[in-house]
Image (cartoon, rainbow over all chains, first blue to last red; front, side):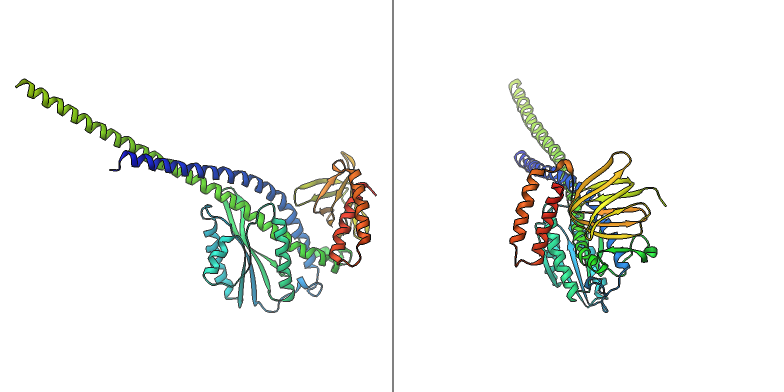
Length: 294
Length: 133
């Protein structure tokens, strides 16, 4: 049986860990609230943008713009993989990585070469260890700088597609569903051909473009890639905060359980010591009285 | 033919407006254009400028938009723009100074690249829209 001193030390250390986790939970909750508000605002914009772009793409020929190129062969796949920089967010990263591995295996049968680029440290740490071809790598992405990062990434990815070093570009990220639920999503951003526009484009042969279609495409297509990347960043960040909040909430309540158990053990031990001492005293006086009578 | 247009003004920060309007004037890249109910499908990129529309409730409204694009389809107009400002938010005096400074800068700009010129031009148009020129 551990001594009282040992138990008190243990309780103290669990308490301080609990305090830290409680604080992290609160921070994650505040960040989640902010990120969720930003995401809710961004979703209609990015969805509307996609509708417009897919609609235009459906009305265009592949010669109209380099980004409408239809690759003859599926050789090079470039995946942009969104994970978190830091841990302590439960199964957030492990779930992503597990799905990603399966996806890479599946696509490996179609594409000759798969390249992974990363937003977030965790995904890269894993995949660079197992020797997958890794491309660009970004850390420190937050709500504040997601716009800048997404512009950089979009420029790099579209350029690769334009010159033909990649034939398909896929974004892999956690789609935020609710504070307790998220869904891993693989979104193909390039090529645009063969993607379904949400509404039919049958009556749109009489669509009027101003300026002419080629120039419109030239200005909205690169922007579209940026918008979708920024959207994926926002989705991923919001999911991360939610995952961290849940994980810390669980950790806090686990710590409470441990503290309760240890306190019980402490009381039992203390009681046992008192009982032993009492027995000693009683025995002692008993022995004395007997001795005195004789 | 529908009597009204549905207008949606969407920015990355929020849904600025979603409601029925009877007509709309927008700063298209090829010049300002008007949209009335029953318009054929139409897609245009926009310059920064003033977007005007008429609603039943509040009469004529004006917003300053920072470029973007307008998509007209089935009597629904979607304006996608980086940012929008209402006239009340704008500091006209400051914007006036900006236009002068930007104009000078643009005049001095001789051998800069297209993207630099474009960025400056966009800023100037925003400033002008704020002043109301």
